[in-house]
Amino acid sequence: MRVLVNGVRIYFEVVGEKLALVDGAIVEKPTLLVLHGGPGFDHHGMRGFYDRFADVAQVIYLDHRGNGRSERGPLESLNLFQWGEDIKAFCEALDIEKPIVLGHSFGGFVAESYMTQFPDHPGAVVLSCTQGRSDPGEASYAVYRRLGGPEVEAAAKAFFTEQNLANMLEFQRLCRPHYNQSESTPWPLRNGIFTPETLVYFWREGVSPDEGGWRDFNFLPQFHKVICPVLVLGGEDDPACPIEFQEEIMAYLPPGTGKLHRFAQCGHGTHVDHPDATETIVRDFLAEVAG
Image (tube, rainbow, N blue to C red; front, top):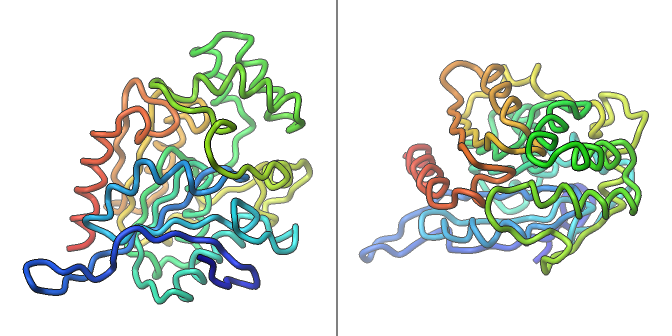
């Protein structure tokens, strides 16, 4: 399904009803809006885990503009400020009030853009293995070096420096196996849609902070605006968004709004390496914020 959002048609999927019949009575469930990582991917990689919450929430997935089955719009609209605005407009188009917005990795960047631009809009936010600002790579390089040695570190540096096809393939060969501590399927082998031009544009050089690109974004100074509960999930062996960044998010959130769960022997995605524990934590959070 698609809906017109800020001039582009956004693709989305819905798992589970909003109004459930329980013991003969209608019960309204909260909406869990799941934001995929990337950019350049689609929502496909999130469904294998987050579909399970359809018993307690209406779970909605979308493909960000320029990703998956959604339209791109103008190239310059592929930025974190626009992606954040799209979340609010998407909810308004579907009459979703007080959504629980879950952003993983890049999806967390978008969730941070949304919750700082529109702090009164979300009911709650879950930030999964993400960070509040861009990083020159040193924190990530240190984890790649610890997990895989100098060759893996060098491949990561080459990829982060220049996103060409050769560096991307070498990153996939050497670095991707260290993303998680359990078995996971490399993204090119998944039955999803990959849009490399979106990734390349987002990571381009010479981007100023007001352009919302990878090289120079920073939402941390705006975190004081946040008023909703925020659940932060992080893996201690995450080379993509190291645990230091989740700790940094907690340091900038207003007191009492954030809660951090850190996982040992866990890489980029606590739902991948520790699915049972992650499910318990997310279910408890959903129950708490849904009242």
